[in-house]
Length: 100
Image 1 (cartoon, helix red, strand yellow):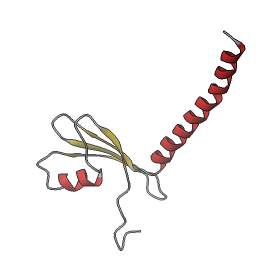
Image 2: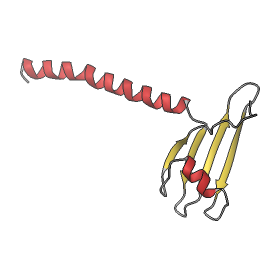
Image 3: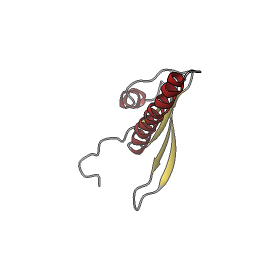
Image 4: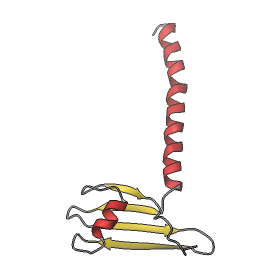
């Protein structure tokens, strides 16, 4: 390899590292602003793996919504839509008046 090739590789490595760090920061930011994960099974069933870490509340929950569930469309809309096999973060629900 020529010295120009080594220089190109040397300059490319920091760019790749910075890009990886920025991607990790975006992922960490997304994780901090969610209340769990949702996954959709091949039959359309949505499973929510939820958690709370606020004081004094601490807990985990597992909720399953089949397509015939009366709340299915509301959950699907909150998730921004999903496709079978997809997994995504669950954003917090808006607080209702009187909740605190």
